[in-house]
Image (cartoon, rainbow, N blue to C red; front, side, top):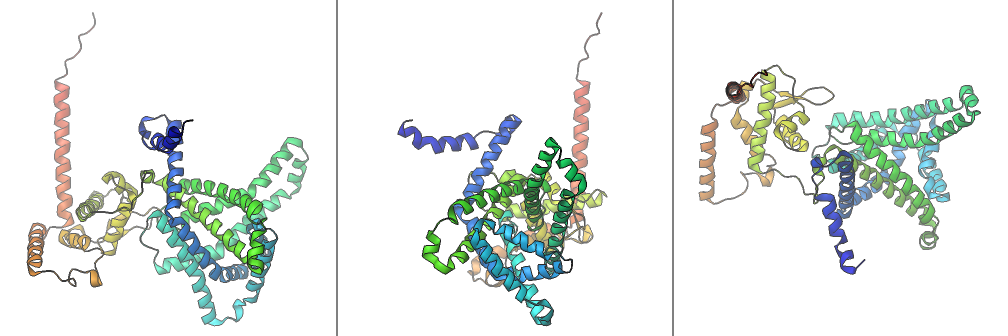
Amino acid sequence: MPLSDLQRLPETIRIAIWRPDLAALPTWHALGLRTARTFWAVLRDLRQGDLSLRAMSLVYTTMLSMVPLLAISFSVLKGFGVHEELETAMMRVLLPLGERGVEVGIRIIEFVENVKIGVLGSVGLALLLYTVVSLMQKIERAFNHIWDVPQTRPFAQRFSGYLSVIVIGPLLVFSAVGISASLMNSDIVATLSAIGPIGALIDTVGQLVPAALVVAAFTFIYVFMPNTRVRVLSAFTGALVGALLWGLASWVFASFIVSSAQYAAIYSGFAALILFMLWMYVAWLVLLIGSSVALYHQHPEDLVLSRRAATLSPRLAERLALAVLVEIGTAFAGSAAAPSGEDLAARLRCSSRTVDRLTDLLAREGFIAATNDTATRWLPARAPDAILLGDVMSAVRGAGEGGVSSASYVRVTPSVGTLMDEADAARDRVLESRTLADLVAMTQRQDGADAVKAARAAKATKANVTPLPKAG
């Protein structure tokens, strides 16, 4: 191949992946291109360094919080007599480190056993829980960054949810492992294993169980950790990719990095610690990559050649905020089902994350309220005739202001202040005493007029159709 063709190869690949319109392609072709675009987008995110930076941050936090986290899990599992399975699971995670992994695992277990939760006292126990919750909060922020979610969970929800995962999660996992182990060791399975083809199938299933547990664990993390609604199918897709990368990374780490004598020669007694930190970095990076895949599966609109931070102009934010309120108010007035964020995004033809930002803002300002459904739906927080449109516009325009960034703090020339005051006064005159109920009524009248026009047009079209002559 000529040198000039080799130099043009990256550009040729880029055009082949990003130029075609997926909607105009066959299903299999569109699926292949979408997979290639996802691969391209994940590599772009890795090259930009955000995922790597988050993974390194989580390594540091994990080092500080690992012993308290395992101490709580050990104390719970000891009550059920299955704490030894946690040690076995931890050793499996450290298996790619080889002999050094066993050394690190033994040291961690010694540290955990030295933590006596019963003698810590109330202050010590509170600090222990705070350390664990801080780790979970750091993990949530990393996933929120990937999903572009600005808000973390409220403190009460954060505390209860995190502790539920820490306390109940290991118990459910080891219960599932115990049940599968009991089934595999039962007399019926032993009898069936003696039959050639069935025995081979049972052996294959037994080998796939650990991989299935990894996929299930990754899926749960991808669904639970981000402070947004993640579809199970998208989380499962990301978990499959994450599990494959986990297996590949384990093999590469065990085959090439651990077997290298350079680390022992350079770091001597610290080699085990260095390798442990490297493996944690790889593990967190794999987990975050899988979350990125889940994001692009759920939001294909983000599969663009160059990803930029999603921003809203003040004008578009005002328009969309009023449009969101009208959709919610219209459904409420018509006794229809309350719309979810995805419903609003589909009706307004914008990103669901843009709608999430606006609904969060409107909810914080007390204009709308979320239902307790599994998929969050939105209702007016008070009567539509009590929601002043002027207040809504002021809240949207002033979002993010505060302290030294507030309009009342910065110093502007008197002419600029006078001009902006006149513009605000003109806007207030237009919106004076107008409420959400007025805007909903206007929308209903326009929809009714449009329906009448459409019916008249259909009737006129039908009347102008010349009937075909009858045969014979």
